[in-house]
Image 1 (spheres, rainbow, N blue to C red):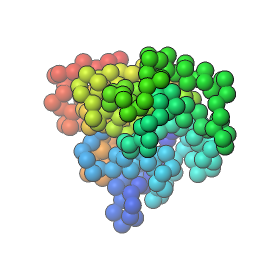
Image 2 (tube, helix red, strand yellow):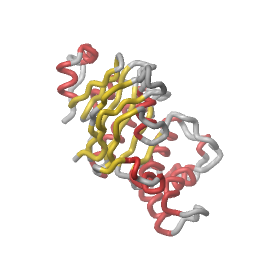
Image 3 (spheres, rainbow, N blue to C red):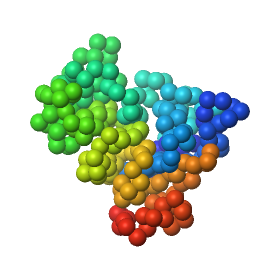
Image 4 (cartoon, rainbow, N blue to C red):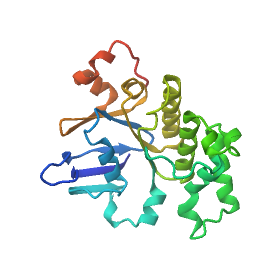
Length: 245
């Protein structure tokens, strides 16, 4: 089922020079959607528009058929979790504390964790197999471990969709593969819609259910199989990768 959709969405910072025009896309429950393309095409702008950081120039975005303009920020934070490329403001927090920030939509003004909030944090850490990291400071973790903690923070939010902007940008090949595999499992096991932007074409083709290709002020979308068969952009990968069902 489509959990997030757009209608004639136009994005950018200037009506005279929009980055994308008339975008009509869907993001589905239980599926991993990967947004890829060259730098400067507007991938981060599209993501920031989805999460209400940037207002669309025109068009509409719907969350479960409800226009996101009609959803309060507090309610929206319970529905959608985001992991951006921005550096975390303070790395002196423990992994447990950072994951617990995902409970902020539920903890009220003072952010006091109740027993059920602590249980959510621990359960998420157990699901991602990072229980051993909970007492460690964020700055002391490897880049791959930091990404797992930030994914855990998003999961602790108990949202219906998770959007991640370049989560594997600074990781080596093995760590990239592990993170994408983890996101695929999260989508399936939690029945959560996951949207990821990346430059890592190989991981995108290997793990994505749907691919979005941004280029030349256009956004082409389809199932991974459809995109590989139709887009020259993916041609070098056809004979090197086996699609996962």
